[in-house]
Length: 454
Ligand SMILES: Cc1ncc(COP(=O)(O)O)c(C=O)c1O
Image (cartoon, rainbow, N blue to C red):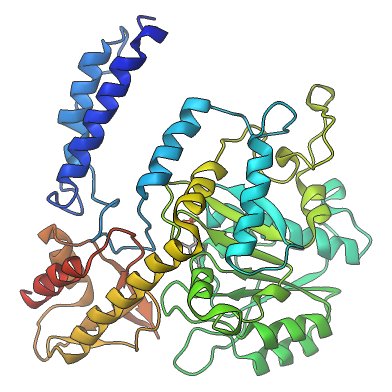
């Protein structure tokens, strides 16, 4: 191997240059790259020099990347990597700690501290404990595992040990995220094996009267309710006070998928849209969304850590540890784990509650500017008032002879913005989700111009 520790300075210089080039071109490049072809390069039998590799990346890889880290990538729910978190993420790789069982470094304690801080950030009771995951999907999977273990406990079955053959459980939800449905499949419940509760009129939020009827009628021994805060399209929040009261009454487990919606708690506080989330048995949230840390970084929180541990416990003589805290490898999917908490810890240190709140406020304000323009434009129809960071709209066919999908294709082709489709009450629509710390009001104006030029 022709690489040696003496190369560190060369590598840092190259990193610094690649970083500058990428950031200088971020706002000029097409938001969605048009170069999607695989690189014409053979499998290297003989490795190449670092200099050549670095040049190849700069000339052949960088230019074909998207500007998903920039201010006008409004597809899905995409956060950017804030500068401090980017720096911390580089350090994570430099330090290369394995945060699996602790006992050899301060990394596990920092992960614990960061989880505690997230509870403080969102004013959640410190009874919530958990683990960093690769994202909200993995957090939702841990939620499905933990709820399954709870159902087993109610029925005298240790599901982790004996399986779920005799488990009797019904699952209720109104508008679960696709990743939650995927998780139900992965956890063995089945992707289709949940009862759809009707939604409130013109919303994706759960109708609590319908939920109570379903819970009352349900004869299964155990019940799991999956609530949303907020839904990925309509940004609708379930009534968590009413739902948690019903879960208590009917002995049901309550999981809340709050991947990005929990950040609204920094705006309207504990009495706002997320009121009642503190009564959940478990919560999913995503830091690579509105906290703007690099991929991949989600969080699973639960008030029932022993149940999570029962699902994920790993025992082997060579893994034995002496620490009193539960090792993270017994709380999550992986044994070996990246020091994923560190960019979050650094972000909270550098921005504080107020700095994080300012980013959230700015995106909500910018989404509002776009929604106001769309509402006044005769080319588009605003689907619903924008109350958070996602704007839903469609073309006004009387003025614009394009379908929603055709609008998205043309806008993405323009390189000015990247948007993804959605569905509202069965009709195809366009979604613009703003969750990047670096988005400016000027970015919104650039996109408005692109929309106006259709
Ligand atoms: C409500 C909700 N849950 C889960 C997810 C999945 O998140 P991830 O892609 O981080 O796994 C998303 C992504 O947008 C989401 O909005």
